[in-house]
Image (cartoon, rainbow, N blue to C red):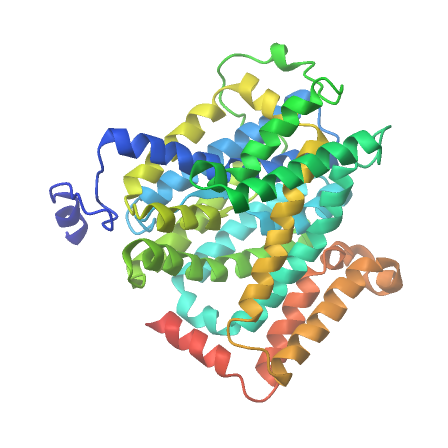
Length: 449
């Protein structure tokens, strides 16, 4: 009944009101700006997975369509909502970067169907966590979450360098042309982000990638063969890549899903603090995390990684001081519309690896930086340093030398390939057993408020 009352209110003109409805002349440009801010980050996992599985043009197109469709529908689930699901806040959703570090080795060893089976199980895990988020959050204070995110970022960096060199297996791998194009994209991203304002700043990665894409054409790096074979309008095909449920895939994806979900609690708080100057309500927190888990089902069905709340769009909310969820809804509808255009998706999927590498190196580096930022949040005393040190040493150490433990891990090797599972377990256990953990108590208290 309370929901009906809220919806019956007259439209508010207050920019800090999530239910506010700014004029179309304001809402549409802001909605498009939200799309631009997250576009490259959302497509990167799909293009990376397409390269790993050796996808044909048609398969790569399906993966890009799925990424667009799932991001759009997940965002609608957040902004519009269904019953208790959805925060009704301006949260833009997109393919979760954190899952790439696990999905890539799983796809190489077990196939994309195993990754998508893991996505479906992750959806159930995330929904379960959402229902008891106040009980789980205490296990993941900043020292634990920051360590895991740092390990995720470090694991992604080699993939970024390989892309910048032209993609592993390409005949011109490591050529000066590939490295030069990647350097151009990377440098342009930094210049736009640091020396420009407005759209040029918020969409710096996208603009740099577009410039790199155009530069790649006369250099012969772009292959658009097969684009014209796509239909003009078509829905992404459900279960086109199948699903399977190897236990190693299920466990690996679920662990990242747990970390990602707990981190999203802070993301929901960030958007309400940045746009409205207030903490998130319990309903907004639970609804937001439920939407994140529920929307992951779409990824398993259509062929995309679980969606998550995009932090760059939260920064955009704070920058524009426009809290209206209807603005982000416009962006979501744009994504759904693009997902129905296979020829557009095929053009996007054809982005040269060197161009993509130049952009993702910045993005992957930002994942590391966010981990460091979280670690510094509560300070690093001797206890915290030990948690970080041992988690990094075992997580990244084993991931960098998997042959050293191959006789022990056997068929479970994929659990150790990224280092995320090892680092997560070590960080959580150490934080629980080492004496004196005020950060954990603070996290539990804040989650229960």
